[in-house]
Image (cartoon, rainbow, N blue to C red; front, side, top):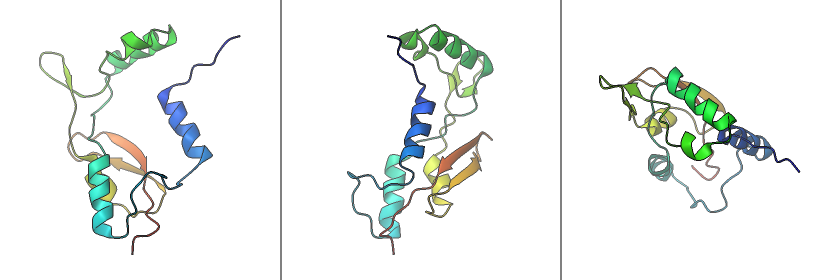
Amino acid sequence: MATKKTTRAAQKAAASKAAPNTPDQDAPTITTREQAEAHIRATVGHCLGPRDPAAYAAWLHLMAEGHEDEARKIVTRGIKQPDGRLVPCGYPFAETVLAHAFDGKDHEAVCPQCGTTTSFRAPVFPDVT
């Protein structure tokens, strides 16, 4: 019997459609704006930078061939350095999330440091007063 392989992006998309904006059962109770901001700063990562087309093509090829372990070793996003390495941008993405309302809606944002466009779903804190 054949099994269907899914990408991480497809898994995340399916999860968000299945249960959009449902509170995390293990999340702490957050009742103030300050707690919400601290939670976001502690859990939201940094900008990885723009996707490198050549590295991404190599990653896609390895994934299509079923070589997931090798594909994980390829850095596909970052700012190209003079020696050819890709280094993550590093801008704290939490600041971008905090600039938006906690409305549970999808937002698009541009990293002010590297110009990469990204999208995210704003968190919802139902108990924040």
